[in-house]
Length: 292
Image (cartoon, rainbow, N blue to C red; front, side):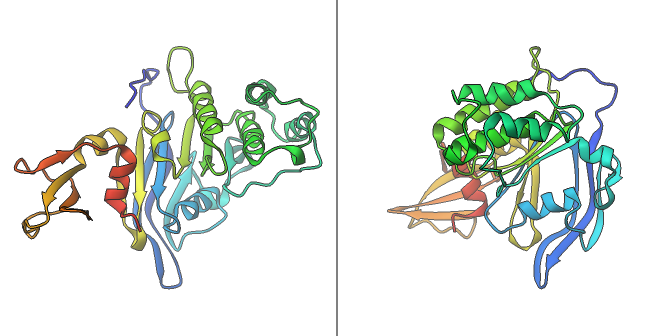
């Protein structure tokens, strides 16, 4: 993890409070008694494979879905009845965003600015300028990656206290993805490396998240949720290499992968008699949730 200095405060405020939240679609359990606090001025990851409930949690946070039971609050308000002032302090990017392709870049900026009192047009044009686009270019002529960056610029320009970015990397090639992550870091941290925004994000590009998110949940099918810091997970979740002829019954592990003459087990347990295999966050994430 990249260490960052955080501004001194008497007490860190929980911007989001979730208590005993449960939700299901028919017989499909999504969450069961989930309790979670997200502190202000943090970068929080909601991770998991497709279909486990990441977007459902965002919909609950925004009040678009009411959970079957439990409490979900943002800024101290029930998420299902957020006041207009609370909604103004939330900037949301959904994975299936909508753009007005008949508008050009400068027109869509002026259009969105009318709805947001704290609008900072410089944030929008900083991101647009990084792509070298003309302001008179229509959105319908942009590539999907360029259009995604324009939409992200519209999100940043709202200057909200809380940003929720649902699969921000969708459709971005490696260059635009790196551009976005670098810009995001500059946007949320001031010149003294103090965090000045709260971010909740989902992504399937695990490598982008190392050094970016502070804490995370990993959502699995059946309502299982793992909560921990990125640093703890990287340090304590290990991969061990075992010969296939060796009995696995005495070992506890989340996943076991078989490759050639060896088994590779992923676990929080310490086994000093086994060989540790170095791996990145993406490999450890798949070792936790499984590849398929």
